[in-house]
Image (cartoon, rainbow, N blue to C red; front, side, top):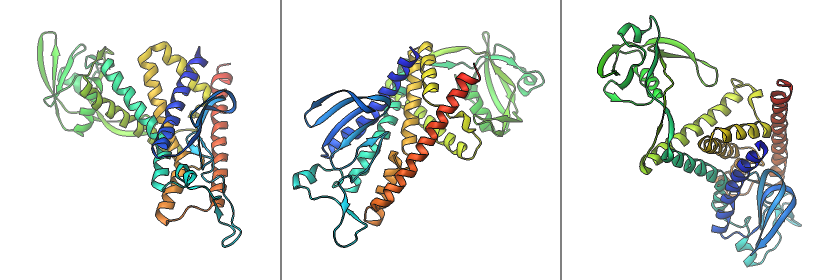
Length: 379
């Protein structure tokens, strides 16, 4: 079942990504020749109208092939001008498009204005981000597990214990600001920058107030880096409730959560380049399959949250300025917009070859890490 869950997750995310390219192409009047889930040999296919819809052998990608370009793979076009050929006169190094009829030009991707091409290429990653945003909104409406502010322990000789706080206290406000989630305590303490805080707590039927001065501490962040912060010395009781939001609140919360995950994804990439995050943390299909199975076993909410996380990762990664990916082609189109002429065909071809090598290298690294992680270390 683990493999089935992985195929479901990847299939949905690839479909959403390619649907973005497909719909924007149609909106811009571009003829779409093929829409494929997966790549490689065709398993099944059916032509409806001008478009052939395919299910292909390898489920780790997909593509939309448009008239006047070579098709998108993992959201990136192979060659926006596949029909190009060397000119017989003038600049022999500069490719030209074969002569098309006016009707063909009107439906050709390569003949569309650069802003239209940018919109079509960006649509795939944007659809992935919007899809994740919608998932988070739905999850907020159906209920989000939340750790309450109940104190499990007031650590000995720490500010909270010295002020009189005890195990079982429920913190209801910090500096007169009502709170109901454990993470809000950390946010309030961090924002204090060491200045005294007034905490209101509920103890049985009593409401008590304590003035507590956070003490400096050195902790590690999500990336394992040491950071300076503040603490009052309390530990959570681990009490969890399900918090529900109305549609308007869910949109706000879903937007905030999407923004946080996008920021975390970008920061993870930056930290990886800085070598703060080790390269052996990169995961591949085996890791995705294992996590998909675990999240499915944990429940539908966990499975959907995992899908949203992967969708954001797919969207952000595809916007990186690496040839073969959407971001690489966007870079070429923005350069065309700035310099008022397309990037030379040879330059694009060399760049795509370099991008393919980088992408293959990353895939090899991911598979290697998966094998070490799940077969060597555990076997």
